[in-house]
Image (tube, rainbow, N blue to C red; front, side, top):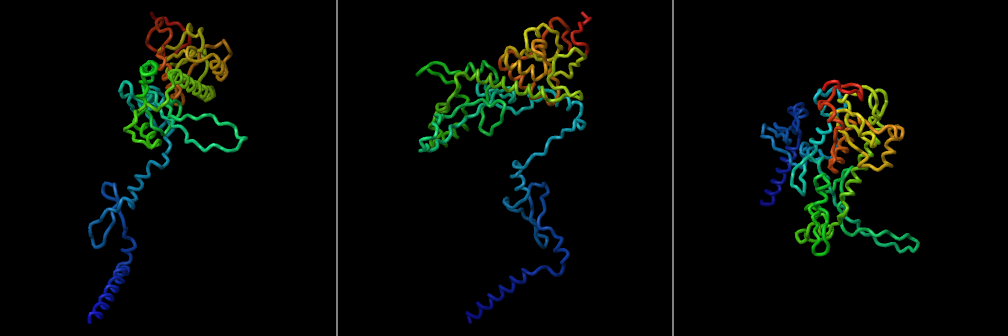
Length: 374
């Protein structure tokens, strides 16, 4: 009797399972159009619809298409910015060509020396380069001798390129690098530059060595160039020259001239000029536009680079000592590089000849024309 009861129960359960698995034949059109999922009211997750009017339940995070798309959003390619200037307001067009607005819009970072939070443009970023993993030496006698590789991480200024490595930031001033320069020898040696090594750099090196980060002195294993001030200065000059050469080749306006041209004896509106560059001693005595940043390149750039810059701009040697950099969205990176270079040296930009003319900027006029008003 017990055996018969068990067999009947198993048949009954099989019948119920098959009956529940059958499609709804009473309302086939409703079954075909009924959606299985729907987004929530706030759109943050997906809900799974249930039969007989029961409350919808959220899908698991692994299967929720909304949450999966949110997790993968950083991997998707970004749509290009709208390059149509006609869609911008006059104020937005002015900001687009203003280098100071771009400098202030950079992300805020903290200086490791002064602890001041400033836009990234006013700071010099540093990254940590770990030494390469040593490879087994080749046994071939004809192989050339390999150069010795560093066995310690080095600190490198990140100027002119991007890097996914952890970065630390210090004020973009030569005085800051003089302050952290290594001094003394032996036990009296002071490594103030060790403030550039942050916890993320130290953690990565500790994982590489397989030791506890808490037992390691931050900055003890790193290599820092004693002439880092000169290294940073050289990189800033190289970045400026590369951007100036690009501006000399880039077209500006309908005439096909470059964005970096000679100082022309014609009507020049100051609103269209981004900066004035002086290449020689004679340029200091020449009349320049008032209210426009002026940079003396001869004090920061060697003579060979200045000659190459003259050739790129199509200028005759020793006949034109002033260059004009037009103000446009294309020249904003170059203007930012110039401001960073001369801000590092402490020279900054100056308006030559302002003590002999009115301080208010002119709206236009002939270059070299004397001001008639007292």
